[in-house]
Image 1 (cartoon, rainbow, N blue to C red):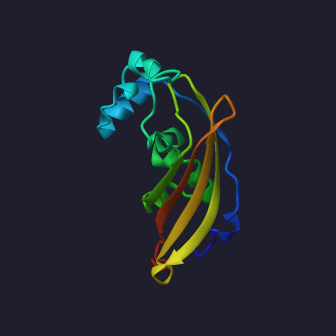
Image 2: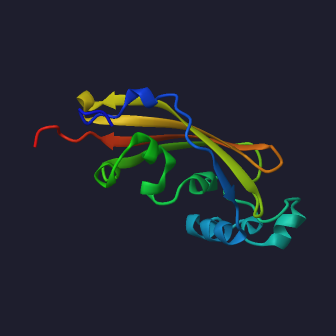
Length: 159
């Protein structure tokens, strides 16, 4: 962060460290249950294989889960240099997905994320951090792209 409490505009365009993610069947079943996905291909390996998939299939919004743990562990949070107080000023604002192919249990995902913009709003009281993410599987197939916006509430510089 810069000394004036605003996010560093020099981070725009920065590529974050790539992530390697192993997709596990239990994670997919749990995620499907939590989001209310009832399609058998998301729960039952027999149904998934009968439908032509390698294994059970991730619901469409699962890629966001693959990229994130706790907010403090998000690669973009580390890149922004936010401490615990800064993380508490961050809110997930928007998410978009383009899905190009299935993500299945047993896949290994390569996740590449970059910061695309830091845009001031509300007279500088808020900053919108935009990211773009590309996800490929172990076969080299691009399976998803995501765009995300985080809303950062800039701390008042006066005590």
